Amino acid sequence: MSLVETDDIEGGEILSLHQRILSDIREKILSGAWAPGHRIPFEHELTAHYNCSRMTVNKALSQLAKAGLIERRRRSGSFVRQPQSQAAVLELHDIRIEVEALGLPYRYERLERLRRRSGAEDRALLGLSAPGPVLALEGLHFAGERPFALEQRLINLSAVAEAGEEEFLEIAPGPWLIGRVPWSEAEHRIRAMAADDAIADALDIDPGAPCLVVERRTWSAEHPVTHVRFVYPADSHTLMARFTPSQG
Amino acid sequence: MSLVETDDIEGGEILSLHQRILSDIREKILSGAWAPGHRIPFEHELTAHYNCSRMTVNKALSQLAKAGLIERRRRSGSFVRQPQSQAAVLELHDIRIEVEALGLPYRYERLERLRRRSGAEDRALLGLSAPGPVLALEGLHFAGERPFALEQRLINLSAVAEAGEEEFLEIAPGPWLIGRVPWSEAEHRIRAMAADDAIADALDIDPGAPCLVVERRTWSAEHPVTHVRFVYPADSHTLMARFTPSQG
DNA sequence: ATGGCGATTATGTATATACATATTGCAACG
DNA sequence: CGTTGCAATATGTATATACATAATCGCCAT
Image (cartoon, rainbow over all chains, first blue to last red; front, side):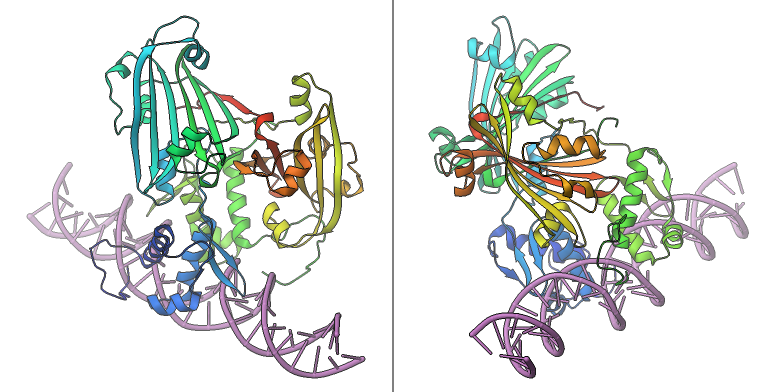
């Protein structure tokens, strides 16, 4: 770390200039101070503001551009983009990680918890043939103050009895399960859907607004473990997956 | 980085050195030539090999490190990391097969075919760095009498010259390409969207109705081949993927 | 032997500089 | 009046250089 030291850095985090520029700008964008479409200062202005070289500014801005937070146009400047989470490789789907990748604070909040004997619908979702105890959970994942995803989950208590003792008030069931139940197989279903009133209300969007729905059923050693449905507002989320062919 | 031919002399995309180093190393890792744990050449060796400055090599390696492909240790070198989970074999779907699985007659119909020199937007979608000839196609996949999916496709004619001779009147470009171009890598983006007027018109649905959008970029040996966007009416379609974890 | 210490080495970060490239606006020209 | 072409501008990429930092190796003294 060099002697540069522009303003006295309050608070004591030792950040490289690069990272400080990054987080400054990210914060402006995520806080809404710089709305989508806003032109952020030119490189040479930031160079002056941070008292550093253009290369350093350029590296930071390039990184923000690659992360999708801003868009750069030659001769015009750099502009704040609509936020989109391009994170999220298909397999993982830990919403906390997605949210934190966006630089936003994450929070989970339980809406409902119901222990019951599985009805026909529950059994269809889980792929169970016989009735048995299940836990039905509904909760909201927040990114900052805004709902990021609605989660509706069924857990097969015959396979994971200890889940029946858990309240899941602020702990999302996904990470909880992953730590306890080794899954051997999963099936994903992805589709688009118009938000009905209940979903619109929970996610704080307009009824009829398009949503991305990701459903997953998980088995462990042939036993159905859980079925979960995530509902994302269309504008909050892009699923991404990158892969090479299995052989040729 | 010379100004040499702007026009495509066949055979090579014009890649920046930075990108060339990136893709070279990525290819070695993904192909398995450099196994996990393998020490990749020191920066100064790569500097010599590519005849460039250490900064350029450093930038490329830093990027690979951030992407999680390699791990860097001071005084020791850079090492290929263990592959992190990601299984997710979401198969490239052939729409004909989907439709026929529903027991409905399949038909493809071309709406538009345009051969042009790639503009900025085309290049962004394809991931091209230099201008060149592209083929822009738009077509409809029918299930019975109803539109099943709208396809908007760009083909990089520098990579697949013979596509420029094809009319694609009733042959969907997807299957045509698969038979000719072995792909080595693909990137998928999945999201929900409200139908705009043009899409609503093509698909014969209401404007604002939710749609599932699947975008795919495909590379063959580091050359961008095609970008395609499928738009499905929400009610017509569910994407499915089933997979097992690669490890833990 | 062994614990400490300095030299060596590879990466991390930053600088100044140079030139390429894309886009915009304006001015000159037919 | 519109078209062309040039200058200005902002970003893109690469260079050479400098010094900081972390980890390791080997030497030396206890």
